Length: 406
Image (cartoon, rainbow, N blue to C red):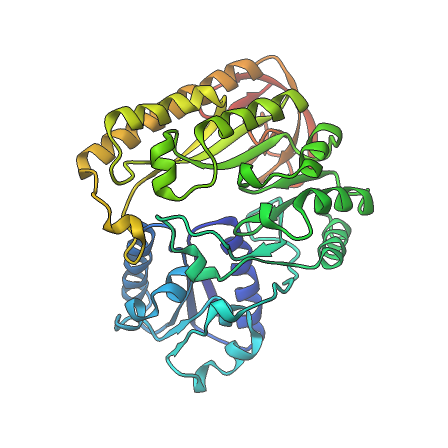
């Protein structure tokens, strides 16, 4: 074992882990385990700490380096752990010079992320175990949701120059990537506009067969993006929305910039433009001050927006955020509401799966005999196929979680 990277959190972290692996390996490191952490919830930080302790027990002679958003936001938490050899910030983790000088570096190397003003493009041809290529176009966030510490882990919003994004997309296609996913912390804040970037990519890289977006903030979706969804078949008909809640008062306490009506209207508008689209969404259960009536409005939002994929976050207070100082909901109530919200999401997914039976879908194959439809619905193929192929398949049935090809 030379360099091993353990990744928590988002697609952006997954993409950056490949950069970390490459730079640390190029620096000649040996017997090193790097934990790329997430800070989105208190539970995410807890899981990272548990992972570090387990790694030390399993690999007592390895060097353990902790980096990522949790290390950036709370370096002292990991510096206090005797199992940790080095703590690196989010900017430092991507630098070959930092990895090359690790032996002589301070144990904690975490710079001021708020001082970073540009987003460099880190070229990777793919991510181990993934068929799709993740292309980072943006980093950081200018918003200050009351439950979120990510701006303090990632810094302010900054965008990769559009020419650099197009050039990397061309390279990815040249090495055989058939689907690219645009990633970032808040990609709808991309400057000079996410819709403009999407149109430029599809125009300038005509060989790109499928383009997909990671999570977006619907209130920031521009007219160019909506026009691209309506007119560009290579832009996949799946949007994952950062909705977070279905009650207007809770949304205000979260310091979100949309209302319940805004979310519903957006989904209705996009569905008129692109009838085959499906929506996923992040929803938090048990946010501070949430009553049963408020929670029910989140349950009802699943149907009101026509969601298909629901990603449920049981609220866990993140120290240092305003939400951590608000009146908390009882743990048992949070657990129960998260369970009910997941059940609602499972029922919504089943309805979508029911509607797909008998259809023909053009799928991108993955490892292990799996594939994804344009709507990102998983498909179990009849026989294993080389990952990265695009096939036309008939949908014969489903098992409640994925489609089954004939």
